[in-house]
Length: 591
Image 1 (cartoon, rainbow, N blue to C red):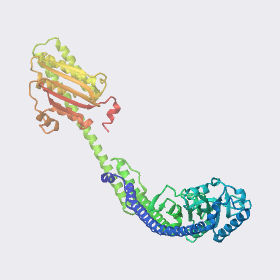
Image 2: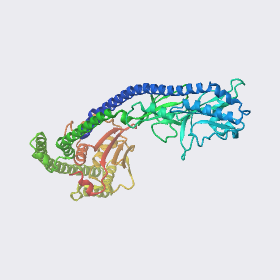
Image 3: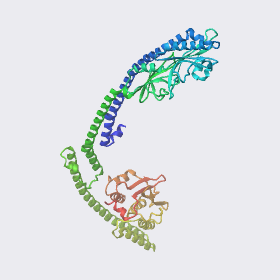
Image 4: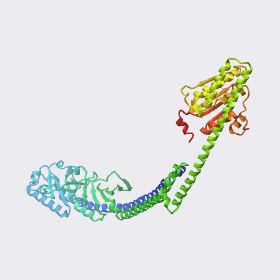
């Protein structure tokens, strides 16, 4: 990772430095500090609100306890028990008992209204009593408790008090609901039969008063719900149901937090209801959010300043340095460069540019001078080497004719003269230095024919040419000196057992010419390497040294001669040349 960073450009390094060492750490610190501070505030406020919720709910339970005590007092009166059997009473006594019960209920009603629903088999006998559609409280007569579901629940509760939201009694043009607390009145003498249901209604006004006595943050809501989530009383009129949402997490026991609100709740073991505070986090963390916003604005301003500084750094320093690096990479010795505007600057950047241009100018001048000198030197060496090879070849060829004539002139002399003519014609090549492989092979074959006659066919030669490469170009007279060495130093005196193999092929973009013999003399590789490297006596090994130097001067050090000792005996020399098929390709090696 560190090495990869070192190889990046300065602009990327600066940007990476700002992100890794300034921007990211500050964001992490801000995020962590902000989260911890917000959590601490939520924890402290949550504890305080949870305690407040418990106290507020306890006060509301006391309201319900007071209602329950009054219901118990009413139920325990002798008048309530007298309603267990009223069928035999005359009409005037029924009226008197009705009025007395109404008076008792009225005495207890103060804010909360108390009503008695008497279970009777003959409700028509109480035609004088108003119904619940007319009266908001009092004594009412029902023949079957199933007429109202909440009456049936109270009868089945075995004397326990129940809290439920029911329709209000009295004349109500619109449906209105009220919080009711009711208990069954049982016959204390006949095994607990239900006489009626005693109900306390309109308790919500007292519960709401207790809710409003608590001051909560702005836009908070308070709800008192039953076990099923139905709203009994609340700060939002018209709410029917309410429950704590599930998409949140528990901050503390009975404290639930979502992304937008905090919910504090408490359950009443006595009455089975729940008091819930719904508090917006924006109101709860109001002052802290203001401070956090100031910090955010400050951080943004700080980041903007850093970005401006980074922009100034990139424009004034990093970009000119990157441009200078690009100029350095693109510069080729001898190439003229366009002048950059940074050269006129008076600071270190301008000095770097000016000295870079001065250096390239001096280097271009040196390259031009060296190039001209090398061209002249190559031309001189090529002319000298070529002028040396022709007399040397002519001498050896005439010498072969001489020895053959000594042994007795025969008609084959004409063939030898013809071969000699071919050699001279190709050797001169009208002054050309580059010829085709086919022409070079003709030159070598003519030489081999001459040598066959000289050595009385004491050796054989084999030539293998890969198909399709006859037209490739190569320097002339590079194979004959090597074939000559094979004959003179290898197979010339082997009495018919000597063989020479010449192979020409292209492999991996390189022209390979191999010349092998099965001569009996051991190969001295150290001496050969000394000849090729120029460390040996310059008067020895003229032929192979001449060929090797000509190839390297023209095509470079990647090409030339390589000698090997054959496992079967003899010597193998490999000539490596570039594959050249046109004059235009040769020009690339002379520039």
